Image (cartoon, rainbow, N blue to C red; front, side):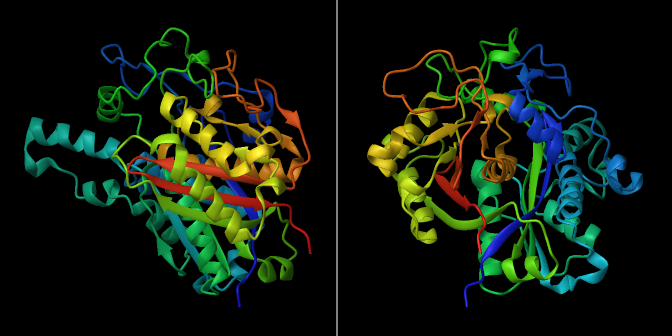
Length: 415
């Protein structure tokens, strides 16, 4: 038996707001979350701007101060956000079978802030001064591990690391766990806190970051606009609670949307560049449609990967046209990275939440900073202002370095 899977809880910590309500309000207002980097002095860097989560205090989310010091920032985000999602879902963990609740939370980069600080300590003071918590703070699986520990979730626990596709792969793989009957509930998503000297320098060396808006950060991230010039790094976390429909109905849970389909594949082309013309991105979207038994014409909205880089936005547009054909003119496409920046491994989780809320509320988040159309990029990118539209179904796209593609298809829940 293949169990139906629904979304019942949403948790988000982002550069434009934390918590479901604040995040959604910011999306609808087209709020900009990009500013000058404050986590270190960026003066010597080519890219000096990012989407930072401001004034984050892990203890405000119930994390013990001592335990917080033993977590990298990316893990703190995950534990805090999972708590928001579980609370939003109305899950009373004391009444649940915790052996049937699992955790799939991934990260693209992991504890790079911890690695940077410990390397500095090593080179300044020698190996004896390295923290005994260095390794468990730095390794990529620890967000999933700490979420499981904090909430005593004994079901399947894993960590997908697929660069910018991480969050979506975690959610899609968690969906499969429930479909197979291996768990009743899964806490799933992505987290990232990589605004560090090494990461900003590394992405800058690749010429991937926007460097021409250091004095105008509000207009730096501009997906699909002809004058886009690179992505803007962001940080944060997006985690959803997935449940089997039977479990959700039995406890009277609120259902945001049904997980209808999931597609995952690989470009197998290049370590950073997407395959030309979005060929395998299109195939990935079609896999999600096929998994759901749906046609593209039944999908009203695409929450795009939309990074604000030339190759991604061009290729994704071509991919959508290939899948939707003549119906491409009718589907709306937007990128919330125009507001949050690119949250890397957390992007898929945060964007799945935006997609679920679009399905529930029949409202589409805008692509802000869209001013100039580029030849061939002529879809409805929901420019600059949120738009009301009936959303029967919506797709959320995530594409990562190394050619990792993941597409989630959500639809309105109906009996």
